[in-house]
Length: 183
Image 1 (cartoon, rainbow, N blue to C red):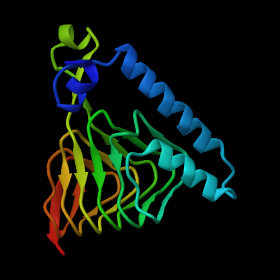
Image 2 (spheres, helix red, strand yellow):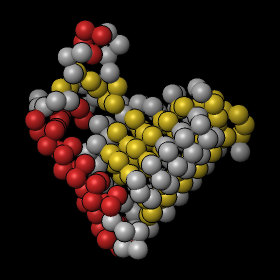
Image 3 (tube, helix red, strand yellow):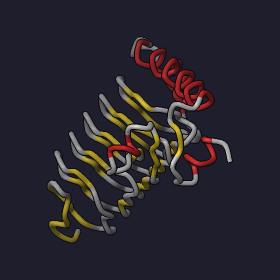
């Protein structure tokens, strides 16, 4: 099994693999191009973003700056909005439903590293997917960690660190993020 297949299957893989480095280089160059495109050229920005992401809805807006690792593991639904400084480490699949709104300075991190320092220092890592449902509002400065699913119709309060799944129809806040109330 090649390193990309290991990565996509949640197995330990070598992140320094030449093929993965090439994939990241292509994606990082596209992100660079996107982030330096004048905002008045929104159509060009969306064209570039469609080259980066695996799947997009017809209507979306991602404010620069935007960064991701591969792009081909990211799917966004209809009416997606991400404010400035969104980072998606997409070593595993990251899927956003329809009508998702993301505040500034948010991160979605699928990459994980071994706890054992000897193994970690070899460059081996693994990844777990992230799923965000429909009609979700994520406040500013939120971090969503590997393997998390956020249900439909949720509000995630600003500054939260989401380490566990969040059920549908709730407001959740904090570090670690916890359900505050049902909607």
